[in-house]
Structures are given as C-alpha cells and as structure tokens.
Amino acid sequence: MSNSSSITQFLLLVFRDRRELQLLHFWLFLGIYLAALIGNGLIITAVACDHRLHTPMYFFLLNLSLLDLGSISTTVPKSMANSLWDTRAITYAGCAVQFFFFLFFITAGFYLLTIMAYDRYVAICKPLHYGTLLGSRACVHMAAAAWGSGFLYAVLHMANTFALPLCHGNALDQFFCEIPQILKLSCSHTYLREVGLLVVSGFLYLACFVFIVLSYVQIFRAVLRIPSEQGRHKAFSTCLPHLAVVSLFISTGTFAYLKPPSVSSPSLDLVVAVLYSVVPPAVNPLIYSIRNKDLKDGLWNLFQYILVQNQ
Image 1 (tube, rainbow, N blue to C red):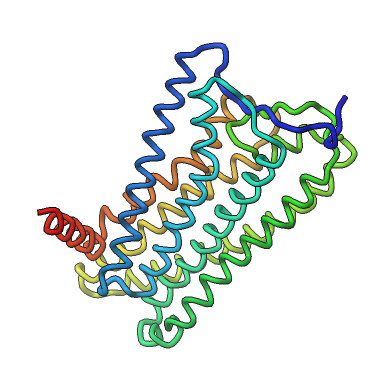
Image 2 (tube, rainbow, N blue to C red):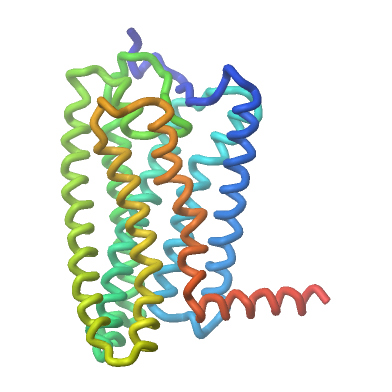
C-alpha cells in the first residue's frame, strides 16, 4: 500500500514488451498530431485573416480550433515522448497539470459546441433576430463563458481528485492522466466524493445535450419548411458538420466514462480514449471544411496569399 504523499510520479501505459508497438504508437500519434496542428492552424489563420469569415459561426469555430489544439497538445506529445524514449514516467505535478488542462480544454469545447448549436438555431429559426441575439459583444461573452466554465470545472476536479489518498500504486492503464484511471488508484472509501462530483457534472453535460437535441429538432423542422431545394441544402451544409462533431464527441466520451466495469479492459479503454481525446481535434477541421464553401474559399485565398509571398 502507498499513499499520495509518497508518490512522486505515475507510470503511464505504453507497450514496453514490444519495441515495434512503441514505435507504431509514436508514428500513429505523430501523424494524428500533425494533422490536428495543420488543420486547426489553417482554420484559425483563415478565419482571422479573411474578413468575410468574421461572423459568429466562424468566431466560435476559431475558438473550437484553439481548444482542440490545446486538448491534443496536452496529452499526445508526452505520450509520444514516452514511446520514443521507452519510458512510462510522468511526474506527480506533471500529471496534475496534464489532468487540469485536458479537462479544461475538453469541457470548454463541449460548452462551446452547445453555444454553436444555439448559433445555428438562431441563424435558421430566427434569422431576423440574428444580428441582435448574436452581436459581437454577445459572442465574446458566450465564448468567455465557455472558457471560464471549463476553467472552473477543471479547477474543482483537479483539487478534488488529487486530494484523494492513493492506495493502489501509481500505474495508470492509459496514455494520459485520466479521471477513471486515477480513481482506480484511490482508497475505496474515499473516491465517492469525486464520483459525486462526476454525477453532478454528468447532469450538466446531459442538460447541454438536451439543449443541443431540442435545438436541432427546431432546426430540422424549420429547414424542411424551406421551399427551395438550394435553401435546404445550404442550411443543412452549415448544420450537419456541427452535428457530426457533437455526435462523435458525445458518443465516445459517454462510453468512456459511463461504460460498465464488466466491459472494461486496458485495450478497450485505450481505443475509447483515443476516439474521444485524440481523433476529434484531428478530424474536426476536415468535417467543418469539407462541405463549407465559404471556409474552403477562405483556405484557398490563404494558400494563394502564401504562394504569392513565397514567389
């Protein structure tokens, strides 16, 4: 038995028994990480530089790209370094910092996705009030609320989780410091406080999910009443990418935190964690740009500007 006061580092999951798997893990994560950096970086640059994209929808998309870059940069580089250098260690303080920032970015991202659902609802169901309800000041306040709520949520969880005495060693069966894995190390009679906080958090996430669902019910009803096929297509093209991102995030995150212990295994936990923490930041730029003409035009203009500058 050990306690948290005697733990100076945690041991993260890596494939120490086979060097080939370590290197495969490194190159796979490197590819995903570079895709996330390039994709989100291009969206941020295009939205910031193209005045035609200075609208509430793209303002929120820029914030989402920043949060995606933050979340994947919190976990993946350390995991890549461990695989490359054949080590498992992360310091106690490093684990706490990683825990905090990952929770901060991913929670703020979910709140921002909820705000983006409201943006689409107002744009399609109340277009005449769009400028009033989503003015520049209102957009800044909503984005700040998402970032601030994520920060507060992360502070509460970090303070609560790392105050728990740890009685079951220091090995985490995950590639980053994840809440369920740390709770497995805590004493059986002390982790209920954190579980209670997770239950409260679950209700907040459920409220956001219900809001998103109700918003899209109203959106689809309004879209189906649009007489022209071109109008319906344009409306769907702005809504479906957001709905796809929300569905990917919620389905994988819910399964990761609410799956029954009977179906839990290290390999399954690893796959699910990759799906909800690593894959979305890499594929979100593709999802948002593949059917968005304005964003593709902005990216094309950015490429042309870079080519002209390099000539």
